[in-house]
Image 1 (cartoon, rainbow, N blue to C red):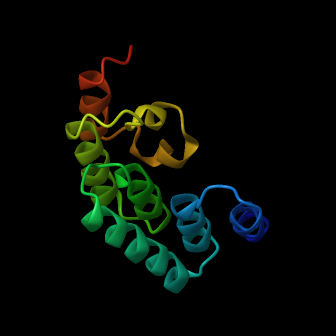
Image 2: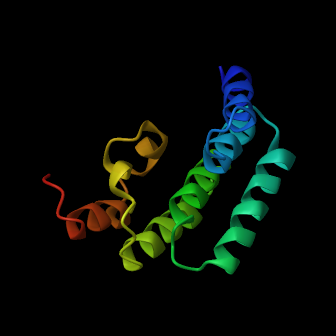
Amino acid sequence: MYKEAIREYQASEQYGGAKLLGLLGYAYARSGNKEQAMRMLSQLEDLDKRSPSGDVSFDLAIVEMGLGNRDAALARLEKEYQQHDDDGPWDAKVDPIFEPLRSDRRFQDLLRRMKFPS
């Protein structure tokens, strides 16, 4: 139901909600609209350059997952962890978007360093 999700994410912003660029990019990628997903990725990268605190790294990781770029997603999660961002990649353990990473040793190591129970 990615097309419906795209409409909802866009409506959220129209009605004063937060820009959901990460989730919007993920939905675009999963629905086959890679061009729009790349636009979301580019917008997030621009935000990251203006404020390189790691705040958007989780959103970048979400878009990378949608595009099937597991290594890039892991690098983004690692950056967010290294930046000690308050939002952090804390949802990564339970978020179904990251299910394809669950068996990856690098992802398991990241969760271990975040002090998540096994």
